[in-house]
Image (cartoon, rainbow, N blue to C red):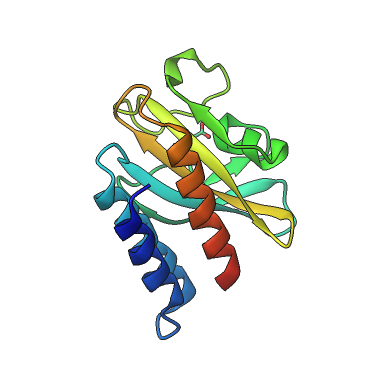
Length: 150
Ligand code: SME
């Protein structure tokens, strides 16, 4: 998926003159601007030793959900399952935390550092059922590259 976007992501991540969190911020913005159905893009990371996620860099509307307990919502479930979670229609989910009424679908991909699930990338879309295998592969690539600089 989108070779130019992959190249741009790598370029941002490899720029060691920029602080790491700023590089992740740039990646969020690149993804949100580069893919029309990515309406909110953010990273959550495990909050120290706590069984909760903390919001990191993101692009899109501010969210109240800056802390998410493990097991809660789509993000919290991925923190414990270690598996990709693709939600074609958020209305069909019971364990879901709504960030905005405009969001129709979501994809969350865990981020592993040395085999440990340390966080995730979370994408919200205002389109129903937009995500394919190509999105999963692309976001796995992004997370692998992010893990290298953490
Ligand atoms: N919808 C997520 C919460 C995070 S927001 O999408 C930014 C969830 O159910 O975990």
